[in-house]
Length: 332
Image 1 (cartoon, rainbow, N blue to C red):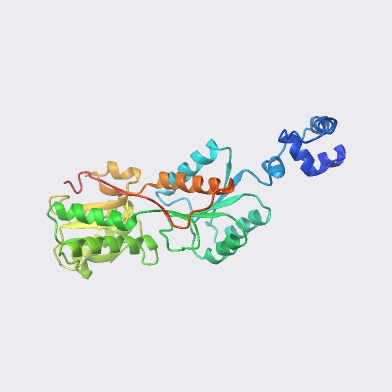
Image 2: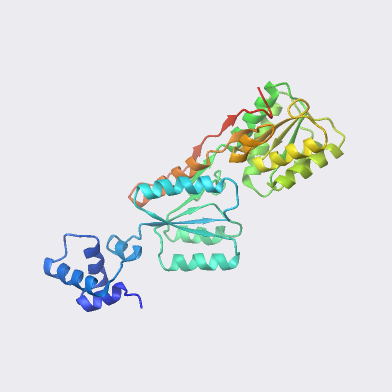
């Protein structure tokens, strides 16, 4: 049976907090007491958990993170940014997904009840907002990633979805494209609304109308992009460019255009959004709006750790800007 901090405390005739203070080399423990505690630790082979080591500080030195899942193409970069900051500052990461729905949320709630982490980083999964809000109102520090300011009660790190889409539109207009189609993400996503608004606004500013028949709702998958091309061609309307709301759909658009005999970029220019790794390796290589996913993870983790060390959380979203990456599918 694994020896617990409670067993060490009982044998040393001290409190669990005192054991934790000894483990943390606190100077306010009497020397003879500290020696006795260390003798018990050595005799029992006790290995402290992160929670035990953090007891004296009132912290676990662990940050929780809740995400919908790990299959989103940019999630790995967000996690890498988070991990880089946490490791550099001596914190661990407790990662939870919502892959199993209600069961996953129940497991996450157990970690909350056990005070397993000091603060939470959140890429909001569906149907969790009311619960997370109650945790935040109860005092748990929470920082949202990719929130875009849609939940103003939470500190957040966002990217400039609207500006990124506007930059894509400006690039297409600048290369002489005028009949622009758009493959959106699902309507319920905030990034879908922001990217659509950015494209609409920049086209309208140039006096170019976006025909609603050339707007197709996709599902952020490669197959969805290819299906969207079939839908666009079925309208029998001419189009000379496609802006897809993410790179996976843009790759599907390239597939669909190739199957339909449309040359890219000679007949149709294609622009995606995210700049995931595949974007540089498609044929032709994909012009896209780079979403600074790793930097967003770094910024969110830094914001949360600064708050845990006494800094106030910002009242407005921290925005990490996008940038346009020009490749062969939509050259200048």
